[in-house]
Image 1 (cartoon, rainbow, N blue to C red):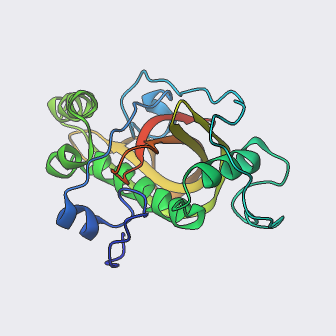
Image 2: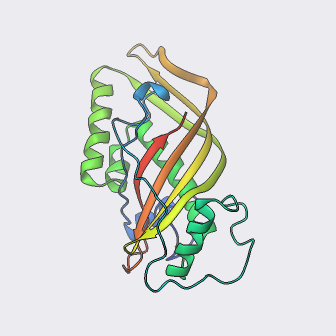
Length: 229
C-alpha cells in the first residue's frame, strides 16, 4: 500500500504510512454522503461535502510562473481545478501538486481498506476524535450483527483536481477519484449479503482536502467526501 519513502515536508499527510508513524501526523476525515449499501458499507453516513465556490485571489496574490502546461495530467485546462491550483501555488510556493495528488491516492486506499477491516488502532491514529467515533460506531454495529466487511482498491483509474481555491488563508482542493473497488459485506455465516467479493465495481468519489497555508504545519486534512456513483 503506502511506499516507504523519505518524508518530504511538502508531502500530503498520509502520503506514506511509514512517514505517518514516524512523524505522528494526524488527519481529519469527513463522513461520507453515500449510503452504506452503495459500496457494501465502506463508510458511515450521513455526511457532507464542503462546497468550493470560486473566490477571487486574496491580498498578496501574485501570478504564478509562466507555464501554460504546469497542471497537465492533474486538472482539465480551463477548469476551476486548473485555475485554483494557480492560486494555491502562488499563495504557497512550497505546494507540489503532483506530490499532493499521489499522497491523496495513497490516503484513499489506506482509509477505505482500514475501515473495512475494522482496524480501530489505525483509524484512531488517522481520524479526529469525532470522526473516529462515527467510524468506530459503524464498525461496532457491524460486529454486533456478526457481520464482516472487505474492501480492496483494485486500481485508481484516475485522480484529478476537480476544484481548488484559497479563501481566508485556507487552501482547499477537491480530488475526483475514479476507482475500481472490490467491496462486500458478509453475515455471521460468511455469506455475502451485499456487494461482490470477486468482481470489482466502479466508484467515483470526491474527497476534499484543506490546509491553513499560514501555518507551519504542512499537513493537508481530508475534511469531506462524497460519492457520485
